[in-house]
Length: 242
Ligand code: F6R
Image (cartoon, rainbow, N blue to C red):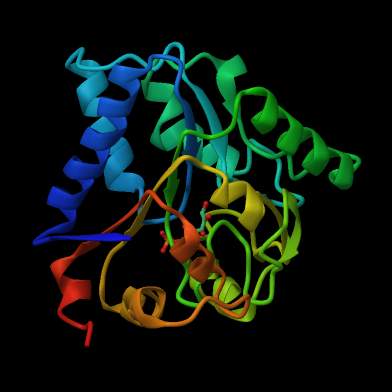
């Protein structure tokens, strides 16, 4: 695992966006795994900027998002569908049909999970996966206790995730209790991974990822078994590491 520290979040965002653009410019047909949440917002802004400057085109890439809340329609401002449209896809040239986000309103959710996994497989697998991390070590919505060999599945959000994400709600009164998420095996199969974490509140999770043991009690620890992973953090977080 490569740990890369930047003075500011902005510098980190520019670096990560640069890596993504580099991969797309090497392979216009890249299969890219994407995350939502607070962390990647600046990265997406920088990708949009580079697109507007004609430094990159997304027209042939295929994307797969990590997760979606169960029960939220794509039009809900709190859904990850809405987030991705607003923060990235409305502003770039990635064709609709190349964008994949699990459908948390599917009639048959188990079938949706199986199909999602199949689509990833058929696309040849994720070549570059962008990740954030929860304070409890979740990646995607794989909460502590999730088996390392899971594929896309239905997951119950941990109390700390509900606490962290409830204040971000725009319209919904209550955060859904469950989500669909790529599994830990799905994520681990990505050829390259970039995990980004900012700020003091993520220090314990990164400390444990760097120095702790591999255990299903701390989902991100599976990444220690990955051979091409970069962990990108800011100095605020780095200053808290022991
Ligand atoms: C989001 C996701 C989550 C977040 C994590 C950190 O698609 O998969 O694992 O990356 O909860 O969220 P933020 O960035 O809001 O701190």
